[in-house]
Image (cartoon, rainbow, N blue to C red; front, side, top):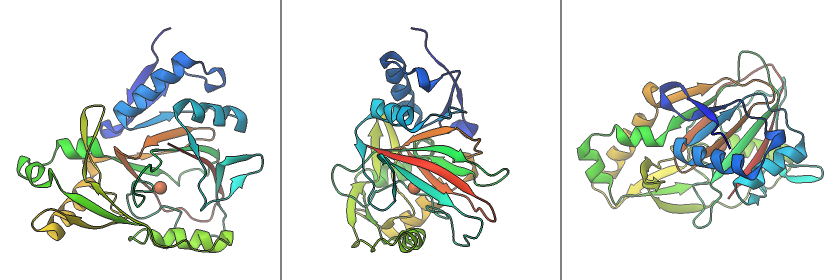
Amino acid sequence: MNSVSITPGKNNVGAYINDVNLNKLNSGLAIQIKDILNKYGVIFIKKQNLDSNAYQNFAKSIGQLVEYPRLKGLKNFPYINVLERKPSDKSLAFGGSWLHQDTSYLENNRPRYTMLMGIEIPEGQGNTIFSSGFNAYKNLPDEIKQKIKNAKGVFSSAGPISKTRLELEKRAGIQSAKVLEAEHPIVQKVNGQKTLYVSPGHLLKIKNIDEGEKIKNFLINHVNKEEFIFSYEWSKGDLVLWDNLSVMHKASEIKNCSRIMHRITIK
Ligand SMILES: [Fe+2]
């Protein structure tokens, strides 16, 4: 089969996959897409408008689907979570304000990929912002690369980002879960490429290193630099899928409008 064409995202963050129709998914195409995902960290596939069945089938071609207990599932499709924003909502968007890597506070066997499809998209706002851990790592000074070689981050569900989650749980009538905490190396390898795993929204401290607090602040500032960021503007039906090992993300500010996203978490 022909290989699909891709276009890198701004600042070389992720890649658009062009001219594919996921309603006509086959195993050859699925393998190519997963390769691109692992290599680039995040993929953008415009205007797919899949029904829930096709959406879930595509997700299954990437990995094992995971139920995400903190969000409501769609009727008959428990793996598809609905993220809804109403015009009256005044709070920050779920996952807003801090770059993060989903569920970095889980120890073992944490889900790796997150996918969103735009169901109802407001014009001119609600971008999702991505920062490439590959690019951020590559551009670190050698001296910092040396220093953080064996460093571990301590990640918590009660980290700085937890404010938006608590808001959402309250609305869904879900009792707040207990605080979860995990440690992971802050330098990870994906497909032979090193990447920075610092999830600023969850990171409490960095261990196994001198001046951990200073290095933590340096790295958080580093991954937030404009040169590693791509702010993705949604259209209805777009599908965006990212690898939480190599890419950080956050929601941008959004107000006075409706938006609906369907989310699937994948292991
Ligand atoms: Fe997130």
